[in-house]
Image (cartoon, rainbow, N blue to C red; front, side):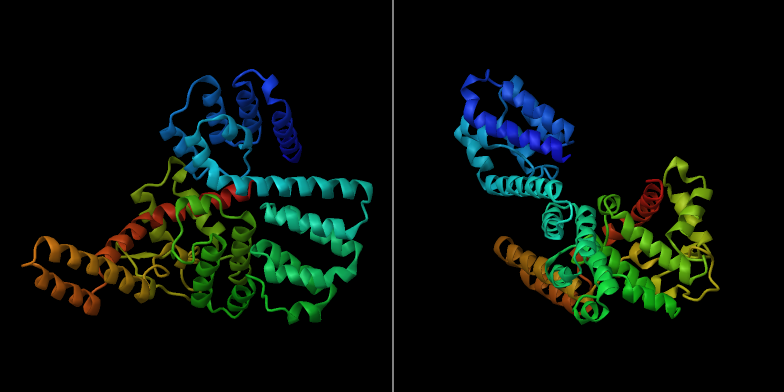
Length: 399
């Protein structure tokens, strides 16, 4: 991957010097090939298309604003040689792209330093910082581990990582490194490992609290704390290490009765290879104790003792309990209701007093229409989310 990026960077530099010698559009084909190699397919499609025919402004805007387009892109030359409207579209992105390029050049420098002196702990530490900034969390962890093995005096620098890095994976790994080298220093930090509280709760057999903590952890890892629920795409990109750690802790402290892997085994036994269906999910609910007498149990009605069926927990993340907070519902109804009252006041003055009374009633007694609709949508997506978690578990265990 780094080698391909070096090739792309070098080619980008060559184009700046010798672009007049290139045939028209030929450079775009080469860039298309480079981006295909690094699996940036949206960008590859853009460069292939622009090399063959004029690209419409509408299509270009869609490509630039696509969620799949990352900052890892070389667009300096195409901007300069394209029309003004293309330049304006990319203007806000350019600085970000160049910053990413700068970091990759920085990474190449540290690679060279390590080749020259493979025992230089500081180079490993610096490369770890750059890798973390570029999203290569495991690479960063490997470099920090190597650095601390070469120089035990780097513990103070590792302490700084706990304060500034935004990745739980890196923080947990660094905390464990510090703990093995300097227990007092590690415990003096404000950071606490992500799974430490879950471990304590499960060890104490406080399964309800542990279930809630599991949901909070999964939302934190997926960066969905504010939204309060997971989408299918969040689950598909969920870190395997996080999912495996959660499963291992549940298996360990329930003597193999609870855990995602237990739910997956039951799910597979229901002939679920044909895909998720309503009947299959109902059967799963019956088997693991989420349904009784043909009806789904509310979270408050669940049993959190070890007398329940295997696979009964974890459950909280597959409910809407993190979404339906009073503050969220109040804010939704407040904003939506006030807007509706204002619109009716302008268009139908005679109706607005009635609507105002209805809005106040909703604030005092109800969840709010908009909150209800959104909550219903969240609930409707929960079976698909659960199936996605089970599939992600299987995928992680085959890697």
